[in-house]
Amino acid sequence: MNYPAEISVDVTAPAGVEMHGPTREHVAGDPYDEDARVVIPFNGMSPSGDVEGEVVYANYGTPEDFDQLEKLKIDLRGKIVLVRYGQNFRGVKAFVAQEHGAAGVLIYSDPADDGWKRGDKYPKGPWRPDTGVQRGSVGFIFEFPGDPTTPGIASVPSLPEAKRTPPAQSTALPKIPVTPISYHDAWPLLEHLGGADTPREWQGALPFTYHVGPGPVKVKMHLKQDYQFRTIWDVIGRAPGSELPGEWVISGNHRDAWVYGAVDPNSGTAAMLEAVHGVGELLKTGWRPKRTLVFGSWDAEEEGLIGSTEWVEQHESELANAAAYFNMDVAVSGPKFGASAVPSLKQFLRDVTKAVPGAKGGTVYEAWQKANVPEEESAKPLTMDYRPPAAQGKLDVPVGDLGSGSDYTAFLQHAGVPSADMGSTGSYGVYHSVFDNFAWFSKFGDPDFLYEQQMARVFGLQAVRMADADVLPYDYEEYGKEISVYIEAAKRRAEAKFGPAKIDFAGVLAAAHHFEEGGVRIAGKQKNPPADSAGLDQLNQALRRTERALLLPDGLPHRPWFRHAIYAPGEYTGYAAVVIPGVNEAIDKGDLERAKQQLALLAAALDRSAKVMEGYR
Image (cartoon, rainbow, N blue to C red; front, side):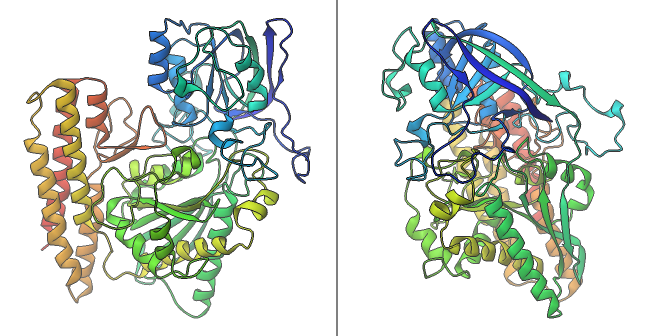
């Protein structure tokens, strides 16, 4: 992975336009932004490079935005593409620009998305100030996360070089230089761009009309990255199970940050450590969990989920018996509780929040219900956005779907461990910048540290409850209902794309019904479990194996590391989940034969899972 050695972005034309970036992040009154240890803004996993070219503005850098530029007859070959943060994962922006022949990419934060258009900027308010820069990895985690030289293999120090993929051949690394800048530095570029006016929805909040270019603004990017194999540390704590030591309940948070990381990840680290403290107090009383509690402090998450991914790949055989993985990244950036999970854990999460006092009275669940109103997408940091789920199996507070962007990815989508993620969100404009520090957090994030305590309690209680459950509290009935909705939606999309009756959905709908029936049947067994320990073990084994049976032996097309049939990060979203990804992405690409093949594989996975549930008597 890379640290920056030299990063510069300079305007070279037209005469009279000056910008020498990246400008140092600074606001008057912040006590931390001038520390000499602050690392210059950079993008993890960007290659080194020296490129110069005319600038083209491409809005958020989505595939649709690049299609729009094609319609405007703008040739991106050799150009430097300027895109704003938002809508999709930054690595996707680099990937699509690379596909279109761009020479380099600049990514900036527009004040429309997390700056002054949202409200007062820091230090007066919580939103991004002019010089604030969002760092972040641009590695292609939608291909596979972790060390880009070891897909599917643990990158331990003893791994022979022959087992590594040479970096130049890795499908997870961009081929063109990418670096982030502030809206202070993007301002002169955008202000002096020529060409057509942008489509009006591309207009940001800077005080002039945006144009697409190309030119006359030219920029030179100089990126010298220090790439090395670096040693990283995952710190693992265990409380061994008294009855089922081989069954693990894992809870985790990452420890690395782009600068100070008060919110991301240290609000989560503090809450996890406090939950561990609580477990420690329980152990002193003589209590022992039935299942083994594992707490993981992951390293190098920010460079591409490296610590957690390599740990999962190293411990894949033991994880076959894991009961759950609970993730917390940003524990607190504001007061609004949110969560995402596999459907089998959604009700479990709701029940846990009913037992935890809310920061402002009542319970966390009651506050979650009251606060559950639609919110603008850009109001939330893209890694922790808790978007509404693609389907709702129960009339209750919505729990989102798991895509990627945090450490649950390898647990669920590679190893098939039922997973959940949670956080408390708010007006968080300083994501991945120097201003995500203690001054911001104690003024805007959680001044009384009440939400921090709340999140520690939710995090600890879910782990302890799962570890001590006689019967694993999975809800496969809700899971089955949601999958049926996904398939019906895919059927409508396929008919719109290919025409009616081109694909037969009868088989996969029957398999989804089969899965739902299995969920209803095993729910009855969960309510009236066997009294003997052997019978309980068999029931719990069937419940665990049901999720694992949804893994596809050969993985998803073109990205075999992702093996889950129901959830994956979208190829062109990166963070947001795509449900039944094999099917939906084949429909998106207009590939009829692949859609049919993926439907058959989905049906087989659902039938496999249903048979696991049926096999328990």
